Structures are given as C-alpha cells and as structure tokens.
Length: 233
Image (cartoon, helix red, strand yellow):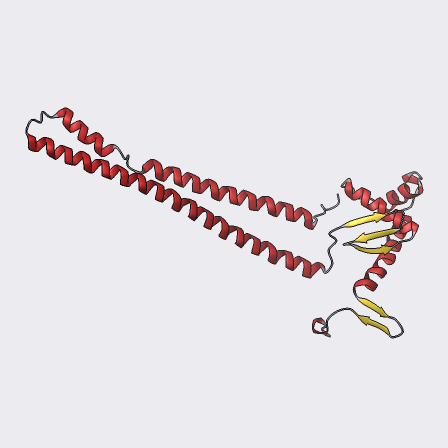
C-alpha cells in the first residue's frame, strides 16, 4: 500500500482549522469565566431587601428608628447604583482583555505559521502556487511563468493533472494506457516511466533556464542568483 501523499496546501488548511478551533476555545473559556463572575457578584438590590425585611419584622415606632432605616435604605440605593456601574466596568474590561488576548494569540500563531512557511519555502526552493495548461498554445504556466511543451509532454502533464484532481496515483502502465488508448494489460510500466522522464527533462530544462541559468545574448551564460548566496564547500 503506497504511503499517503501530504501537500503543503493540505497542511495550510489543517493549520487554519487548528487556529480557528483554538480561537473558539479561547472565546468559550472567556465567556464561561464572564458568566461565572457575573453570577457570583452580589445582587444590587440585596441590601434594600434586607432593610425592607427589617421594616416588616420589627415594629418601629420612634422617629429616630424610622430615620435610621431611611438612611440605611438610601445607602442601599447608592450601593446598588455603584454595583451596577461596577458591572458595566467589569464587562468592558472583560471585552478589552478578550480582544487583547485574541489579538496576541492570533499574532503569535501567525508568526509561528509564517516561520514554518518560510522554512518550507527555503527547503523546497520553488513551490507551485498555480498550474494552468493551455493546449492551444502548447504551454504550461507555473506561477504565471510560461513553458513550451511538446505534444507528448503536454499529454503526459494533462493526464497527471486530471489524476491529481481526482486524488489518484497513476502507475507508468496506467499513464501509457490513458494516452495511447490501449488496455492497461497491454502497456508496459517502462513506457509510462519514459514519458515521465521526457516531461521532467523538457520542463526541468526550461525551469532551470528561466530561474537559474540566464543566457545573455552575444556574451554567454550567467547564474541569476545573488553573489552573497553562493557557497562553495
């Protein structure tokens, strides 16, 4: 059984899902903490309720006692208003802290992903971000760079592209069968491998000419890389 093929785009999508799940988990935890905090805050009307209960349970007749309870009631009202304002302040602080935490987490995740991405680019050298095959022009466009192909190489690349769209892996015999129209049992593995080799040679030479070795008219050839990146070991 062949090993599963892992592509950079698949890793990027899985990383995006992991980031989304992480952010959702952070938001959920903050929401639960906010609910727990607000549920455990004292009731703003609890003090007034206690003063009212004192009026009900006791027979207060003197002017001084009634005045004292009025003062307590006014104090309870002031306390409830202060507590309500505290609730608003706490809610605003929670919102700001959640926003700052999410922003910091997002920045850290983006930096980590960017570092990994840069490391992958450094290891891979060239990564194909777009692939367009033009049968009329007999040209394949890789990252908006056009490369001319022979009819045989273009057919081979088209078969591989269609197989990739269907998430299929083709053997050499299957490639030869699709291109030639013969039965797979009548095709040899070497024939398909030869087509792949010719495609690699044709396309590889053009990529090297476009990205690495430049031909300067009437002068010669030169590497299209900076002098500071060359190391001789």
